[in-house]
Length: 391
Image 1 (tube, rainbow, N blue to C red):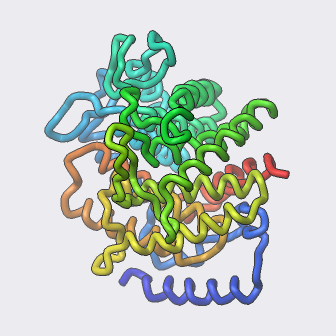
Image 2: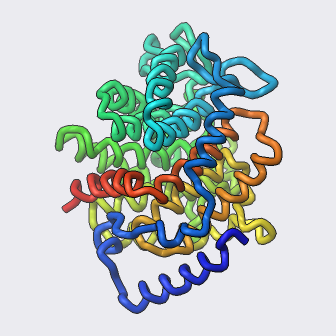
């Protein structure tokens, strides 16, 4: 059981305490005041597990001549940009916990990703694959994942190159906003055939994270844009439970009602961000409702999310973030159950694709942060900077 009974007891006790108190410092400010370590004493050493997976990625997928990662064990071409975003986020987590080996690799990977940047297009952005420039195959969500990962790298290192490239990536993403179709929203791809939650929710979160590091006037613009994106996405895709449909085609007008973890996950994070910067309790309550309803994604046999790990690792990240904001141990337990399940599967047979391995590493590094004072301090500062933007 690896401590699940004790964790469940903690979850019940903590939930009752929060209900009795009615509010807490974190519930009022959106900052992290909760120590996860007492809830994780009986758990695996997540840093050790994360390092094991990360080392496997370096040995099995790294292309040292290019500084990039192969798409899979069987396909040695460089990974697509979506996979690069996940791999970069895993490396940021690795560098935060083990800087000596991983910061140089992170730096080299960042430099190598310049091969994907198309500076010849009217709006510069990342292509899915290495490009000579002037391409027309850009995905807005690809650039949003890069913006989020680069912002976190800047928060860790204070290297201005990461901040600058995060801003450039987000600028491209926001160029995809279009009021003329469906009343707003960011397109998924430059071909302009659909608008997706995955091309809007990460953009809102990136706006809020980057607003912490730009001049006040620009920060105000980014916060306003995040409000517009979240408002449109809520109106278009949110159901009565607080879960989100996937996309809507502007060619057929049909909604894809599929519910994927990462769509709801990024909206939870964006709603928490808006709560932090505005103090508006409505955003906070929406985030909690979506988080509570996300039990729907769980497989009752495994207690893990049903989705593929390339999507579900982002719900683990949302679980950890909303635990920091509320102290509700149910969210932390849900994150740990998923990490334990995916790590156990990985031990039996690592996945073929780099994106899946990096997704597992990312969630394990996030939980390693929760087992260390330095990791908790890092995320407390991230949350606190957003809160200081508020009223």
